[in-house]
Length: 179
Image 1 (cartoon, rainbow, N blue to C red):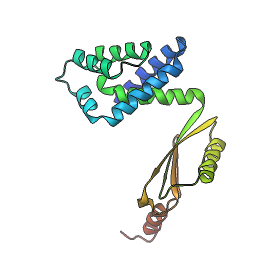
Image 2: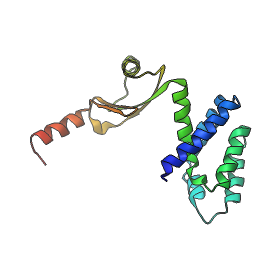
Image 3: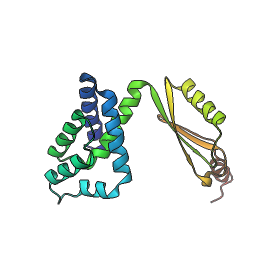
Image 4: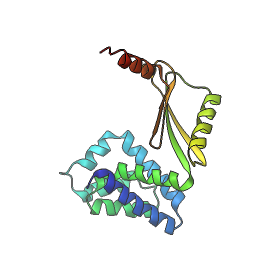
């Protein structure tokens, strides 16, 4: 079974548990903390994915690092270590966050532009996404990439809207059969 499917199953089980115990907000904050910590610490991910390190040692380290998280999240980390799936902790946390967003009707949008866009343009993009999805809210994750030259690239759900100049140049190049 793929890591993605495994992570989704664990995240789904945690999500159901958090809903039943009415601690969904707290658990979502815990998962955001875990995902950010894993994303920003290559050392932590190296330890978690190292098969030589004893799972009990990994659990001890995780409990120290995440001592501020709630009971449900803490027990979940214990389960993950018991099942020897600690190397998937970051993917599980991200998957949980996706479920949480979906539960609240929040659509995540990845926006890439050559320069920082003004707030009015960002609001137009949010309105566009709301119009084309059933989202109640839009969470905009913007980044700057000068390589796209101009315009922007929007990714949300399974959609991609690429209005960048670099994409138009690639298309023109292809049409003219220039290698």
